[in-house]
Structure formats: structure tokens, C-alpha cells
Length: 87
Image (cartoon, rainbow, N blue to C red; front, side, top):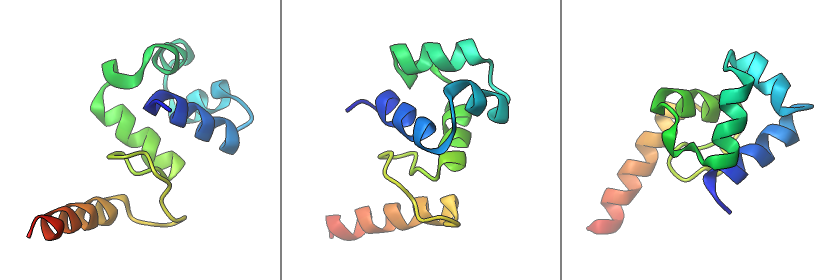
């Protein structure tokens, strides 16, 4: 499953429609639909981070975060664990 497919699945599980999510995120609907259809690689990094934060997804691997989890703390935890595994 691609990152765009994961995002779309999460959007539709948490919102009534992609349009509703686009309005809430203040992203043009056509931009969001194009990114979900063609892949998110062309989207601005900041936009992807904001979307992941809104959907409680880890922006590194697009896994679910616990509700209320601090995104910055989770990213730091992932980095620490990656360095630990390399030891």
C-alpha cells in the first residue's frame, strides 16, 4: 500500500469525505485529490507533516500514533530507537 493510499484510507476513516478534510486543512481540494491519485511525493513537506499531524500518523512510516501523542516526541523516539538498533 502506497503512502497516498494510506493517507486516503485514514482521511476517509476519520472524515466524511476527502473534500471535508481539504476544507478543514485549508488545502485546495483539487491539490489534495491530485496528490492522493498521483502520489504525495510532489507535495510540500510541511503540508504532509500537517496532514499526518491532523490524522495522528507518523510522517516517517505512516503508522498510527496514539491519540494525543506529541508528534515531535514520537519522531525523536523513533530516531533514538534507530540509533540504538545500530549499536
